[in-house]
Length: 95
Image (cartoon, rainbow, N blue to C red):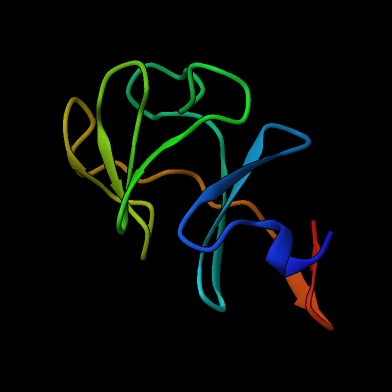
């Protein structure tokens, strides 16, 4: 998949229970699980609540920071999203 398949300013659900979150050329890949109650961050497939640099869990409304996946508001403050390994090679996302 191309890096640009991940919407700029948005999140894309990936195979294997992961999500890709992109801001310009900056990409983060996390496991799609809220650390609060171990549920997916989205309520509907492919639909995520993103507000600027923050991602909101659709179930418990915990708020996660783009830069490091850290929960900054809600039930899991101080707990980060689990990062998932990835590489970008020639503009392509390799999981």
